[in-house]
Amino acid sequence: MDQGQISITMANGPRSGSLLIKSASDDSGQERDSCVKSTGPYSHDRDGIDDNLGQQYQPEREKKEKEASARQANKMIRAKANTYNFAVTFFVALGSFTYGYNSSVMASVLGLPSFFSYFNIDVDTNSGSSITGAINGVYVAGGAIGCWTLYWLADRLGRKRCIQIISLLCILSAALQAGSVHIAMLLVARCLNGFGVGMINCIIPTYQSELAPASQRGRLVGAHGVLIVTGYSLGGFTGYGVYFESNPAIQWRLCLALQIVAPLMLLVGSPWIPESPRWLIARGRDAEGISILQKLHATADDPEASTARDEYLQVKEQVQLEAGEVTHNIFTMMKRAHLRKRLLLGFFLQWLAQSSGVLVVFNYQILLYRNMGLTGSVPLLLLALYNALAAFMNFVNSLLVDHLGRIRIMTIGIIGCATMMILHTAMFATYAGGTNKVGNGFAIAFLFLFVFFYGGSLDATSYIYCSEIFPTAVRAQGVGFSVSGLFLSNLVYTQAAPTAFNNIGWRYYLVFIVVPLAGLPFLVKFYPETKGLSLEEAEECADSSLASVGRKQIAGLFGDPVAFETSATGVAAAALNDKQTEKSASTGENTPEVFEHPVQDKERRV
Image 1 (cartoon, rainbow, N blue to C red):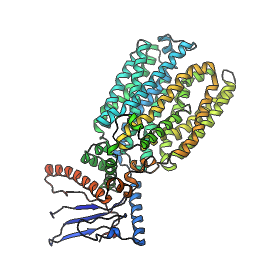
Image 2 (cartoon, rainbow, N blue to C red):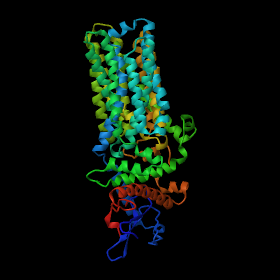
Image 3 (tube, rainbow, N blue to C red):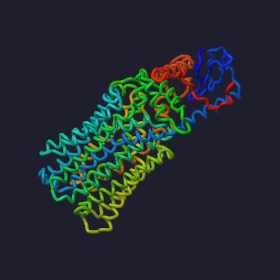
């Protein structure tokens, strides 16, 4: 064997770190063999060392196998994101900010009298209410269409190129809105902008989840929710600030023009971000995928990024299992039971979260405050403070979700939101339009407590969960379809809101009490917990034939599980060889032909 060459054979086990290592010759010319015992019910030996090891069954050996597997699993769970991983995750969250600001800015614009006077809209008439509803309606309709068409870009062009194209679309549509001279022009531009933010609202959590380690995915993907509501908050403060601008033409146009800033920053900085390693591996570009995984996971405790290698092997196995899952539209996904279940779980989770009434409360909050007798800049200031609280609570949510779990924290949120909505509705029904400042004050306070629960439990968590439950091959389609539930529910609720408030008043709020409470038992019963699981493990909620559930299931699909594992390891070795060969050619260094899979327990070496 050539000097520096290491050949490896992986033993069995879902998270096994066991190997058969044939090392390079020592100084005496004798080859040294190191045999690391199997940590699963199968073993494999290319060099004739203990062929019958996998057939022996001993209680003590079984105990050691379980302990070794547990150590390896704990290692994966403890894997941490490095500074580079955090930097990329939070930078791409500029797309999340884009969605938040663009979705919130119209609420501020609707609080500016100059906007209504420019377009000659009378909000006290049915036609004026219809136009107001259409401004929000075409936006969410465009968002729903964007969710459904995202996969075409994300799967064919990659996550990175998709983010770049969407950023450009958001910039152009924002410019059209700011330059609108007719209500029809504004509606078209608003629809195009909705189309763009609908896609960006799906691709960002998808991309973040594919970069994040399992132990910190809640915090990292939670950045999506945090930056969304930060955008909402800034949109509110922008509306409050421009209210004092003396030139009416600048007021609303400046609000809309500022939609350009975040996507422009994202577009300019996008060449710096890496492609999703899972997308690369799924398309056979293993060397690039391994390189990015190592860069994302290398830390002081793990400078060689050995957890990245473990993750690569699991991703590669999952890609092989999903080879037949490649679908090109939602309709073919719906024909497959395990994918259909995931689509329904994601879609109805988003619908359930929005059925709390959060965007109806937000979009028409200014009009709500005016119905309570508040005038001038006060409604705009309250809107800005409301959004600031929401942003802070989303940050709290991102810190708690990895500790409390997804389902528990969402259950708390639904109960809390419904309770606050009941109390707000009671105050609003009793005191709205009156002069009782205490009663109206309590109505406003309950709205703030409502967003305290929503931001602290439901907002970021709903995106995290939807990004976790889909296989890599269909994650973009799955997340897109799930988030379309957000836009479709808001299309229904926000389009009906102006007319409903004019005709039935406070009774419209009853919808946002009954629907989430009715859906809560389904959340508790049918939604599995995904806390602390890798993306491949999280997929078990809808399908058992996955790489993370063990080689016995894999054996039924691919025959000999050892052969399958050896094949996966061989692919990893070949991929790394390509990368190291390129490095050797450029530096002249003699690098190993294959990487050595990390071995956790030195005592188990022979």
